[in-house]
Amino acid sequence: MVNLTNNDIWYAIGLSAIFAAGYLSFSIAYQFLIAPIRRRRVMEGRLKKSTREEQIRTKIFKNTQVEAHSLAVSLVRRVLGRDRLDNLQRQLLQADIYWPVSKFLGVTGFLGVVGLLLGQLIGSLPAGALICLGFLVVPFLFLRFKINRKAGLVEKQLPDVMELLARSLRAGHTLPSAIELASKETADPLGVELKMAYEEQRLGISMSEALRHMAERVASPDLRYFVTAVLVQAETGGNLAEIMEKIGFLIRDRLRVKGKIRALTAEGRLSAAVLTLIPFALFVVLYFVNNSYVMTLLTHPGGRKLMMVGMVSIVLGIFSMRKIINQVRL
Image 1: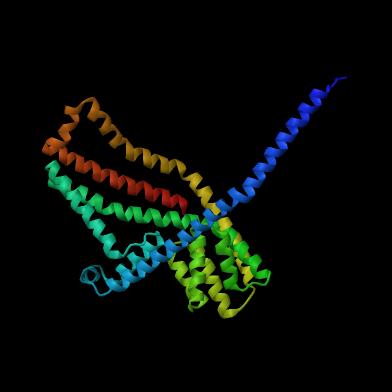
Image 2: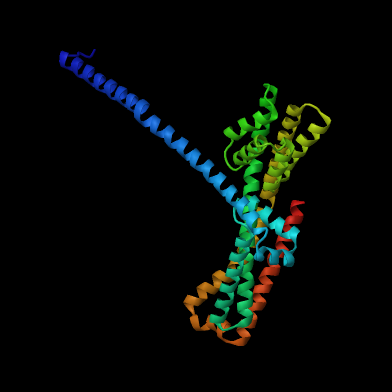
């Protein structure tokens, strides 16, 4: 049996009192100082983000109206055609790049000029043309990457949003109010798109037209399924909540199948990446190990021709392996 003295008891009471006072002080400080600051920062972040999105979209709208009568856009429209110009603007919005078409094409042209200058520094016109072509392709590759990335994030969020919309409709909400609720509970990028659709509906655009605009801003077939279902239901009637639940199940199954396909094609994609990077990595290694041996490819006319043939072969190999992988996906 442990014998406790009065000093031990008072020591334990003192420690307990200190712990209780510290915990109480921390709770009070958190409740009245830290928590309000955190809530205020979250609110300021949301307001700044909302303001930024509105300013960006307003700027895009103004630039589009101004550019409709500009000489540069008129020339580009005559060369590319109005449909291609509108399609490029739609792709920029799908990638969350809030640039007018003229700015994007201007940056692309600037990169092409930089490629030609690099070719002149190398002293080879074919190499300069090849570098220029590569620099011209880079912005469009980046654009495609951003579009696919946004579409992939939206598709991952869609099943949960479909379930949330279905539950909201069953609880008695109208479709616009259900979309507003989902926009508050959903993270970006789908939350922003739903919020934009709701705000367009508030400004007088019909819900169907607002959803069509949302489908145009996201390059996702799954989102188009949702929009098509709502449009058909508006024409024919039916249980929209049940339709959304079925769409959610369908999208989940599609995502599961896509995951299996990515697992099956992982080896082919990795092989394509490795075979593409090996020539460049070997060139860099040999440049530092035996510089005179590698520089023959850049200084000798036959070496430059071999480099061009090699680059063309690499590009053809990439497209061939990509086609094989896509056939496996199908």
